[in-house]
Length: 44
Image 1: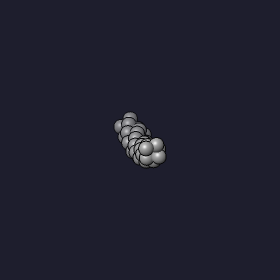
Image 2: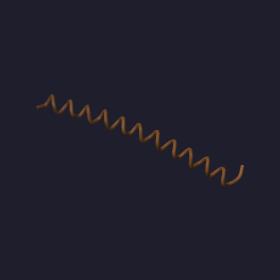
Image 3: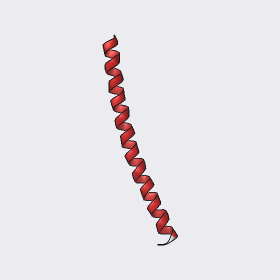
Image 4: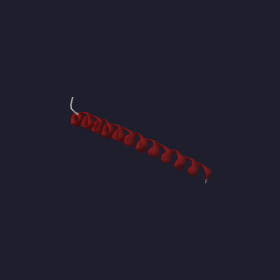
């Protein structure tokens, strides 16, 4: 494997990881937002 191929593999892995983590963060944020909204509705 050449140096260029190694770099390319690492780059693709990083892109995949960031996409996956981004999706997870979005889901968590959405759930947290809904949870907080439910709590504020109960309080008022």
